[in-house]
Figure 1 (spheres, rainbow, N blue to C red):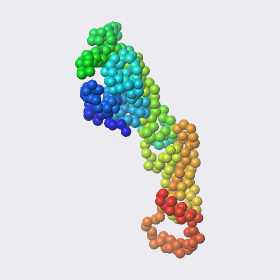
Figure 2 (cartoon, helix red, strand yellow):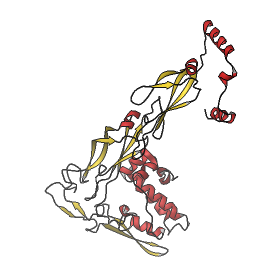
Figure 3 (tube, rainbow, N blue to C red):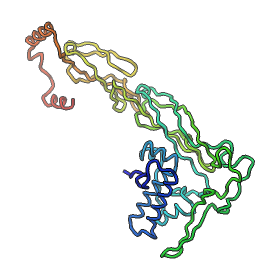
Figure 4 (cartoon, rainbow, N blue to C red):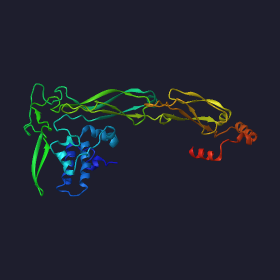
Length: 374
């Protein structure tokens, strides 16, 4: 199991973007091959880079804070370190010409970048899970600014060459080490690697090209869905940068527990109480089902713990397969308090019973197994 990302960077869960960036750069300096010959430095840097990649992205960080590592994996995120021959190559990928966004992706710093995924939870009843339901969910995303159409410039004003990097999208710094001159290239912090900036930033989004927006969406939850399963809605997440596609929305479905049932795949289990005399004589009882109570015939001589099956009264399969069954567990109820008349009747019954009345067709080993299982 991966370590907690906040623990990896050594920051609190409330750390802001600046603190996270500083913590990562501090670790990067400590783990650089020019200063750290430890063979474990490469793995440590990979771990720190993965933590930074998630926590520096608002959408991924929200998903991680809510659902942890499992939420990131179900959202399609996985760190990709293939293709890097050494930790120096990894540093080059993060601090070189491509900047942070090219890590493992092979995208140019100024090119289109897809938006982050978003996540939201929806809670339904067990009956809704059996029949399917349309629910409304509300969530926040970074949406494209319609005032500037996402380019960050006030309408009617030009986008000009970045004065800091002169249009290259990169900044270089030369330093000396014991191995000689070291040239580091980083993404321009003024234009974000695009090489261009708006002459007059958009008055609505302050030049960001995106705005925080709350959305409400109708989501069709299919029949047969189980608690904890996720529904993926493409292009419903955060807006992409520089014309990149929007991320996806993941709806985590929570199914409320129904105290009448225990779910086991598509099957349901329930318990019905039957007084001991009626279990011996046979009777008809009402048992709970998803669409209302159903009559169930209890045959004479029904024993405690016997299970009766109502076919097709469970949940439908989510994709292919058969509809589940409803398993009714019979709980034979022994009375705790008796009137004098009732006691007299039971004593007369006990005297009249013979071995023939009480003999069971079940073997001793089967009885033991059933008793232990029950």
